[in-house]
Length: 268
Image (cartoon, rainbow, N blue to C red; front, side, top):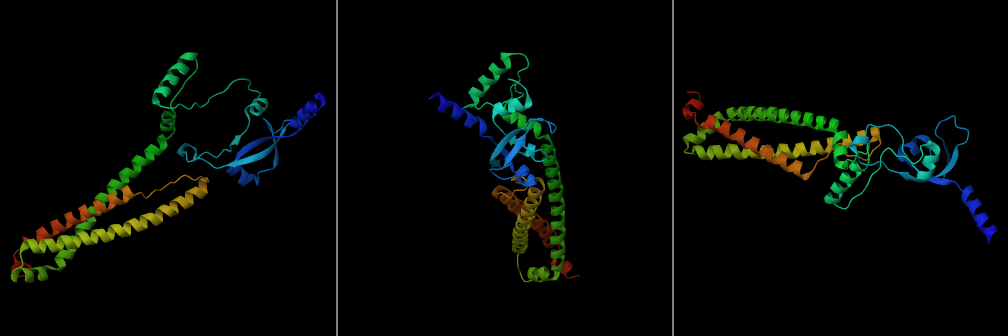
């Protein structure tokens, strides 16, 4: 019985432990599951540990990790302690709690346990590490506002030009007894249709651009993170905004036209 236990212990010691590596490391080093690798704290270490790659992990969708170029290895805690010679100490660890009240109690107990313990909510850390993305988001919003204002002015100019081209047609309709309200309604309906057509083309171009952006930057950073999204709320906002701007431009252009006497529109 003792000899069989001793043999089992020797076999356990002889079998290498397993690790999980980042998919970027696997791709760059041409590694696959089942390969044997050596782990050591420094390249000059004389007694590296032999381990087997047991899993290849995909990168998470964390924006804070997009620009980081380091590789990641997941290993057993005792193996990590022996390689780093760090002892029974950790720099940071994560604790899962069932609800917000439990999180608050855990924060209080951990922070009051001893000097040097700092507990933070994961969402607070995410906000702190995502300041760069918040600045980029504000910058994009500013560009969006400028683009909307410029497009509104451009749309108004187009409607004014189109209405000016129909001066004689509108004058003829007015002399035939067509009311100003009917003329305005026709111009506004045309502007709304143009706005809908333009918004549909814009959504299509935006979707194609979004796919290209995701394809390019996912390849650059090798991450599944979505850099550009076309959501139903964005499409709804774009269509409604286009309709509002188009109808407003149609109303302004038609008001300028119907307030002019028909003979003046004929140039007399």
